[in-house]
Amino acid sequence: MKYVFMLKHSRHIEKNVTSSRLIGFYSPMDKANAVIEKYKLITGFKDYPNDFVIEKMEIDFDDYDFEVEEMM
Image 1 (cartoon, rainbow, N blue to C red):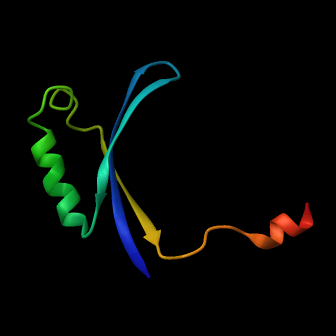
Image 2: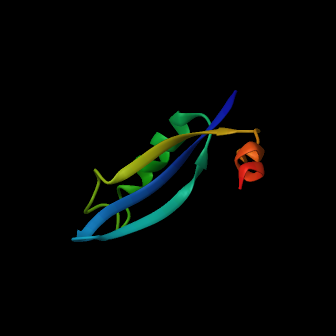
């Protein structure tokens, strides 16, 4: 399996309101961590250094379930 790491910055502004910015996709994860360090110096991100999120995402596969479609 192959993976990439999606990096975003998400912070709660108020109840039921979240500000989320997609920064990019990286491989390996070390690159995502290096980008976080760079963005921690940028206005809009530096005040919320703990709001970076990295999600591991599998690539090169079909995510559509034909069996569910046939049942409908």
